[in-house]
Image (tube, rainbow, N blue to C red; front, side):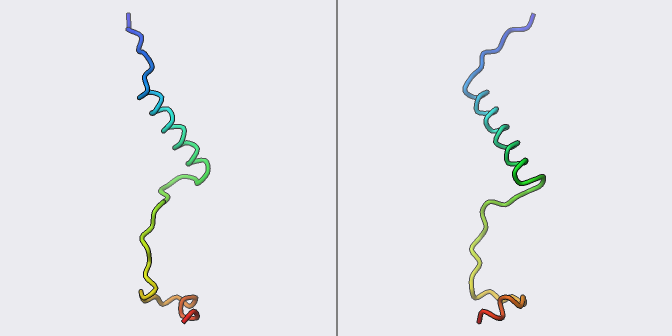
Length: 55
């Protein structure tokens, strides 16, 4: 006979994380989505036309 396991705060935390992941997947779709990006300097060279017109 198997022992019954008590629900702990770790189990609740795991369930919350899983729910958050599923909600994010519904919102953004499958795949990787970056949350933080490095700051791009204004001085960096780019060939795009939209950046050439601003100077």
